[in-house]
Picture 1 (cartoon, helix red, strand yellow):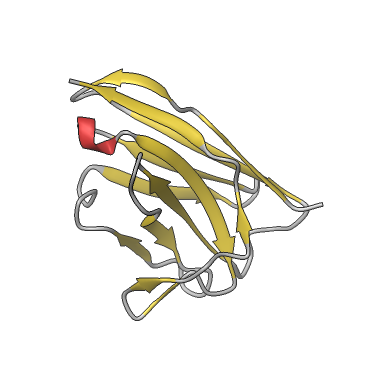
Picture 2 (cartoon, one colour):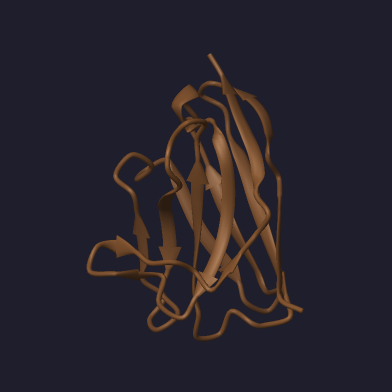
Length: 124
């Protein structure tokens, strides 16, 4: 059974940091694009960042570029999202995801696998 399990969410003050983790089981990251999405209340889910399974290139949404860093440890089958200088508008449920082609021509595509989500709340 394929599973992606996020952890590391919580409540943090504006300007603070959090690191999200996503542990995968039932498949390996090799060859998959892996990434992070989020959904804020009343808004559509949006792609934030991903790592290409083909060449390791990373991509970031403009609003998180320079503040968030995506990484992975393929030996542990775990991906991470380091979030710094958090803002109240970063408050959302954060999801990790994996897919054969997650990001193409500047747009995110529907992943093959989703995590269950972890809540991040940034207080002002």
